[in-house]
Image (cartoon, rainbow, N blue to C red):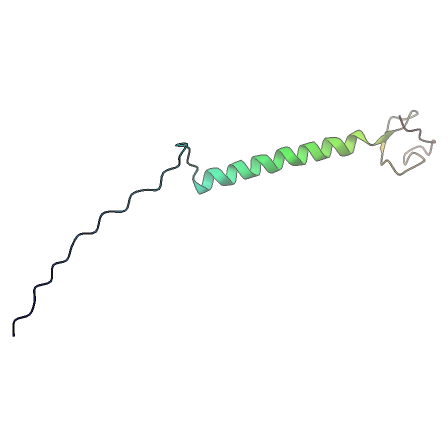
Amino acid sequence: MAQPSMEISQQPSHRDARSPTGFVLTGYEKGILLCLLLGVLYLRLYKRKRKQDKICSHCGERNPPHQTNCKKCSAPLFHK
C-alpha cells in the first residue's frame, strides 16, 4: 500500500491590523495620554472647589464654604 502524498499548503501570512484613520497609539502612549487627561480633570475640579471658598474680608484667609467664621481670625464670613 502506497501512502497518499500530503502536501502542506502555505497559509497566507497575517496582515497587520490597520486603523481606518491611520492613527495608532502604543500602550505607553495611551498611558501618558490617560495621565494627562486625569491631570487636566484634577485641575478643573481643584479650581472649581477653590472658586466656592469664602475669603475673609479682615485677614484674606480662604475658608471652606460651610464655615460661618474665619478659621484664622474668627471674623464673620460673608459669601461673595
